[in-house]
Length: 109
Image (tube, rainbow, N blue to C red):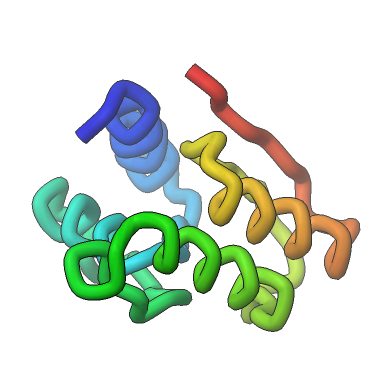
């Protein structure tokens, strides 16, 4: 788990403590991280491409393409991307473009 992942987990825990609903969308690896952090019930998988099975490059390309097709099932809230990797930022950018009422934030630490 990288630094931006740790920051995200701590933010999500604080948001939950303050009564905010948290929904996490990500790849299979992000789901594993969320379950280890006790946030498995908030996670929704948006890509089934497994880096270990298809390789890093194919996984990133597939996730980037999937990002252009998928739409969040929410219409308000804060959109936060804990990663500056292309598939993650592409997905966040596309969601914000489709739904301008989402507030956007990206941590690039």
